[in-house]
Length: 123
Image (cartoon, rainbow, N blue to C red):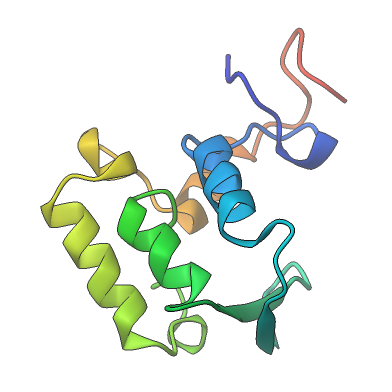
């Protein structure tokens, strides 16, 4: 059974989600940053770039705790994010240190298809 549940819902959290959250907090928590939002995804979440020396997007993907969203080209406007993903994979950083990783857009299709919480899960 997964150790974490997504957003308090009856949905398991994807592997590496906790590490991703921690890195993002380290990059932006308590700091003044600028951001630019470009779009909404299919869950009505804002798709934004957070301006740091490089974007938080690039730093997280390069560390191997986030994915370059290749599911839909409109979400991957910055080619340096894709390059960071390739570099993280080649160097086996973070999630790429383990074989058989599943992209989030594919993972949700299989893992979130459960009609109810598993025994002991949150509702």
